[in-house]
Length: 228
Ligand SMILES: C[S@@+](CC[C@H](N)C(=O)[O-])C[C@H]1O[C@@H](n2cnc3c(N)ncnc32)[C@H](O)[C@@H]1O
Image (cartoon, rainbow, N blue to C red; front, side, top):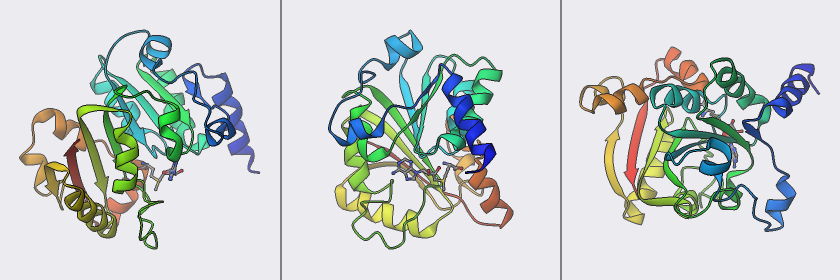
């Protein structure tokens, strides 16, 4: 085990805004005590909650929290050493509207109540090319239906990716499921940012760790926004 990972896991344990519940409880079907209580217990307000799923280092969680001080943001990932970066930055900047949750997205409804979340961001998720049924691709309708259990009606789901495969497979599934598209673009920086409202432009211009890599290789960034 790398010393760096151990150091980050240990530091996560000292953060009040990092939650790492026992995954086995969720596997057994035991709901988390946080379910339905994020606003009151964690953020101590009634502001709407956005979640970043498969958040990696949590660039969207932290970036959006800076842009929207009157909203709350939770980054979710199974790898705590990755979101340590976002958690550390949130602490350094004293951002009160940021939290991180370590779990698998398969169990997301164990941690949030119905109607508890208002928006989802999924950025540069693994395309899972062999996953024909969409049971591993966290942008697939299988997952969207899971996320809908914790989303208010009319919530936004934002999918940003470099992967043509993930974009095509996700879009095909969304069309089949009859989801409502608000935006659909195969070139975020080439054409989309010039035709969206300023707040969405600001959000789209947050660049994640993986995005930096794909941009340096000259890849075009794709985006879909659904209302569910
Ligand atoms: C390719 S990385 C993208 C990270 C970040 N969104 C970015 O743009 O830099 C995918 C992330 O999703 C997480 N992930 C993938 N499947 C997951 C699942 N089922 N549950 C929780 N996290 C998952 C991985 O641990 C990883 O950090």
